[in-house]
Picture 1: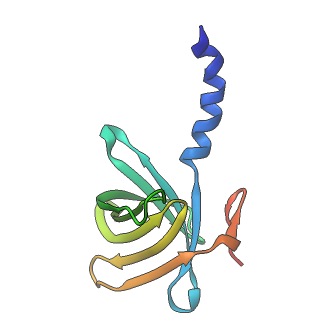
Picture 2: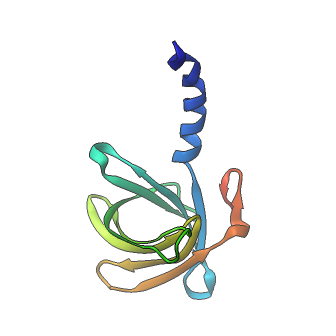
Length: 136
């Protein structure tokens, strides 16, 4: 009997977690902006995430390739270094190298699959709004 009472609470919590987004800016002159949906578990325990570039409507699907963790100091959040593959039209278009500790992003780099060109991003807290990312 307690489950029906908890159901509205669980439904209210779940969408907020699934749609948690970080705003990032980078590239030459900080002219490239993207929104990154924090990772979630997908079908079959596959870890998935998404990015969307400013001015685009399509979210690009990312899948976790690898992840390492390091305890930086006792009692502090662990650092996670992960590699995510970007999928576009059924092929891997590039990869994201992401370093996080707690809620902070310390590294976020994109490497294009064909050219090998690397683009560094940094968290753009000023672009964060209640409705996602908003850039000038």
